[in-house]
Image 1: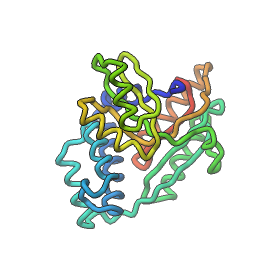
Image 2: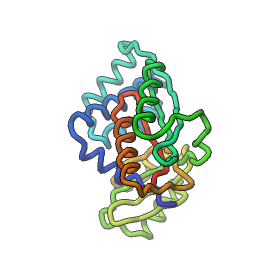
Image 3: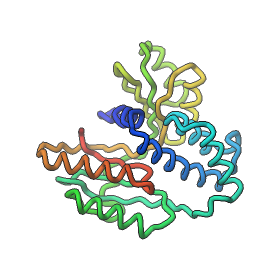
Image 4: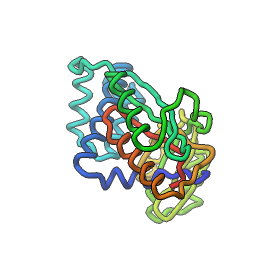
Length: 240
């Protein structure tokens, strides 16, 4: 799978401080609010909501919190109007970065994102400047609990997986974006532990940083972007 790995990101989320976990809850809550408004509060009839509930549970969001956000969105209590905005730019030494946001204040978000790029050795670009280096793919990550590779291969392909990479800790599966839900549900039904199941931007080529200052600034850029409440996802082609 071209070296693409979600495992470090998943571990970082699971080991996050309470403050960072609170931000994860906030970000997923915004996503839930939007999909409830678009497709209703019943996960049986709203596949996007069903996926987000699974995502929330995978990130240890309490059920009470999930129910509260759904009810608030369904009842119209959340008056914020969120919009999706994507920014593209370059980190130190030309690392390609895509930032997906969900915001109720476009000017605030644009100012914050631009500030982070400028402060940490990068620059914000125009739409399309780096996205051609990425492909939209479904990525499902399973916990490897001593799984049999042949059995995994059979199950992965049965539910729409196209490729997979198995390591000591995880199984990372690639699929079409529209196949993520069915793959997650099918594998969960077979008893697998799904760590993550999302549509992502996967780089086709990777950039290497060797200068210590560039590495430091790239880490700081990613940290500040990920800590911002308006930022939902950050994708890059830095080969860490």
